[in-house]
Amino acid sequence: MVKIDELKNFSEAINGKLLFNYNLKKTNWFNIGGTAKIFFKPDSLNELISFIKKFKKKEKIFLLGAGSNILINDKTFNGIIIKLGKKFSNISLLSNNIIVAGSSATDKKLAEFACENNIGGLEFLSCIPGSVGGGIRMNSGCFEKEFKDILLSVQALDNNAKIITIPASEIKFGYRENSLDKNLIFLSASFKGEYKEKKKIEETMKILKNNKDLVQPTKIKTGGSTFKNPINQTDKKVWELIKKSVPLSTKFGDAGISEKHCNFFVNKNHATFDEMKKLIDHVQKEVKLKTGIKIETEIEIVN
Image 1: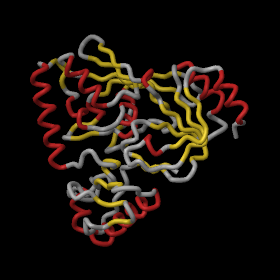
Image 2 (image 1 turned 120 degrees about the vertical axis):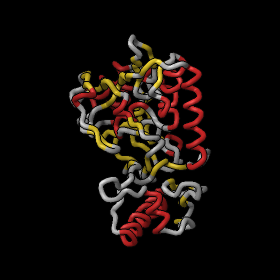
Image 3 (image 1 turned 90 degrees about the vertical axis):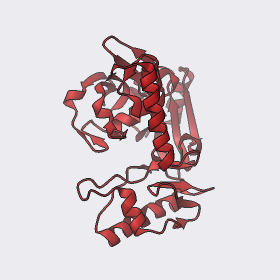
C-alpha cells in the first residue's frame, strides 16, 4: 500500500492533479459513484510514466475514460483512478489518409477531424459516446462497423511503464473484446481511412446521427448499451429479449429502463449503485428465465 507522504511528495513535483477522496459522480454519464481514495490526472507522458513506476505495484489502478459505459460503486474505490486529460487528446494527420489520435480524444472529435481532412471510413465514430482508448479496449462499434475495421496500431504503456507499439494485425478482435492485456495503458492509436469528399462524409454522418436519435435516448443520465448482443446464442438483438422478458416500467428506486431503447438503463433522478445493479441483475435473471439465454453486461462495473 502506498504511503500518503510518498504521494504528497510526488504531487509537489508535478503539474498534473493528484487528489484524495475524489468524488467520482461527475466523471461518468450515469452520475453514480462514490469516491476514489487517490485520483491522478497527469499533465504529461513523463508524469504518467513516473507515477506508474512508483505506484503501480502498490495499489489497484483503474483507468477512467469518458465514463460513458461504466457503473461505479457508491463506496470508496480503494485504489488509484487515473484519468488522462487534454494532453493525451491530440489528433494529427499523417500521409496516406492515416490519423493518429490520443487515447483521451473523443470518438466524435476523431470523426470530425477525419471529416475536415476528407478522410472517410470513420463516420460511425461520430455516434459512439466514448474515448479512443475506451473504444480500443472494447472494440466499440455501431452501424455494422467496429474499431478493428479502421485500426492500424496502438501505442501503450506496458506493466513496466515502457512504451510499446502493437500492430492491429497482432490483435485478436471479437465482439466487444480483444486479446490485449487488460493492464495496458493506451496512449494513442493510428487509424486508416480513405479519401472521400467532405460533403459526402457530412451527409453520411448526418444520416447516422438521425438513425441513432430515432432509436436511442439522448440528454439523459445513461450508461449506453447495458448488455451485449448474445451473438453466439441467437440472432435476436438483446433489446428484443429484454422487451419480451421484462415490463419496461420495471425499476428499482430511481434506476429504470429507457422506453426508447430498453437496453439503455437510466438514472431517473438520484439512483444509487445498488439500485442500478439490482436492475441489471433482475433483467439478466428474467431474460434467462423467459428465453433460456444468458446475457452478459457490456457496461463495465467498477468496484
